[in-house]
Length: 401
Image (cartoon, rainbow, N blue to C red):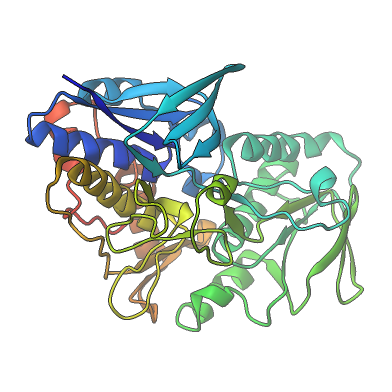
């Protein structure tokens, strides 16, 4: 029997769910002649939506038992090259180059923090993009108590007033006081280049966000970018100098650079345009999902966000469709018409909205309880029970999270 192979690149939310969904189709069809291989640096899911919280090193979930339970083969390494013509990927497997052929490829390599060419950004700014980055920031904050007591030591600037920037800033007054003492006169500032806080979130939740930040003591500087960062602070495009021992950069993300090796149209974030089944339009053997996919979520012009909420369902759809494609079965077009946001606002609470117009439905403690349920239950992988794990990978099982 000639074994075929589905290779999935990336073990984030989209990659993990792609693997489970592909395994589900093969299980339903009782096919053992198709191999599903998941390639990633480590067999673990990093819970990136929680990296603004304390203890980021705890935001790792081992996937070995789950993948074994559903029959997915894990290959440890990083994909360095994709050859679409030959249908090969070159994997750096712990320093050894390994060529892996595929019959179908699912690119689920995720995104990385966007770092423009700003003097001092790479050397002096912290971030919460990856587990290691967030752990470095946490160690820095905990070490502030050893520095001389200056206004800069007590000041933390978050650059970027989008979703991640707001969630990060809302946590920081309490985290600084935990490090410096409850009576410390801490100063948390958000610098946002647009004229509104949360520009991508629209006007719906803005009054709630503004109220929460004000009550938490977070200062917001609008209409100014950042032109330089150094060890002791930053300078804004308006010429304002802010002395701060801690600068956290949260200004946007870009799709993994592997997308540049796949032929096809890309959006401004580097995401590959895909059809309704998440197949890359210019590369029939390749599917893209999660943060590397520019995918329509409905018939009204809305496109998936680079978020966990969309990555989970994008993954289920890509995994199902790639396996169905290989087996000649009917596909299930990706669709995720219900859109919600649940923005954490630290000790103040949270704000929950529904619809692309982001109508506010819950605020404060009620929204916070929902956010905690999302962050600690809904977005986590299923248990390593084969039947339950495969059932949870049904692409028609839409989870709003």
